[in-house]
Image (cartoon, rainbow, N blue to C red; front, side):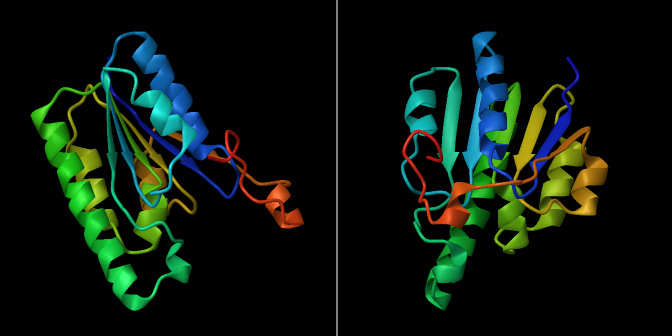
Length: 174
């Protein structure tokens, strides 16, 4: 099977959820999956569930549990260092193992925050093995990323309970 590139972008809820749906589909056929999660360090329901499958490897790129706009300068530097190190580890993991699907969750946001260098992501995408399916998620995908992708889904927020002051709920948002 020829591996294609997917982008799930936009300001709506469901980008990570869509990528997990695709992972479940791959896993149900006994395929190997690498899930690289950026920008998220808090516990979430999907991680605990996915860890139970032997055909998935999960890599999380940060230990910082704050949004970047709430970080001081030292925390921002550490956030960037952890993401760049995590991205490089993920690329080495892909080179040294055979994965059918690689999901870079929230990598587009990490690129927007300058924690990941877009040029390096594009370099990986243009030189990846032909059989690897790749998913990138996050808000505000650039034209360069959109141009290289085979699938692009723009998930729009029409209405969200956060705007009413309802905080994230276990099992729904995390």
